[in-house]
Amino acid sequence: MPNYARRLTRPTQRESLFTRDQVKNDAGGYVFKIDPFDALDRFLILGCESGTYYTGATKMTQRAASIILE
Image (tube, rainbow, N blue to C red; front, side, top):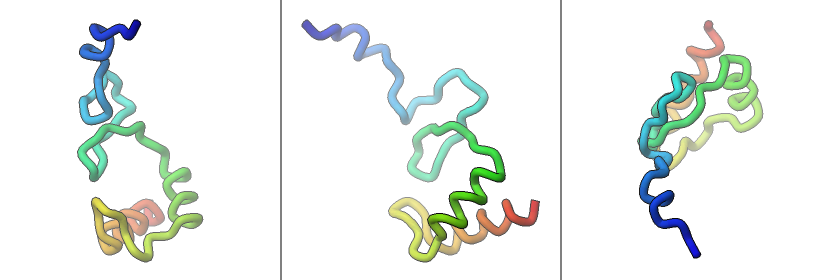
């Protein structure tokens, strides 16, 4: 039998949890913050040629460049 009370009280990804490690992403959800080296790895592996559904390629390139310049 499912526990409906737990489903009602469990926070979704769109709700902020009570941790300081999380930041709001472009989709409106909350994700764990990564360090600049992990962000650089993601940029080098995935690139930012076409953007995503939630943000364009220009904004992604600007973020990646700011991480590299840090």
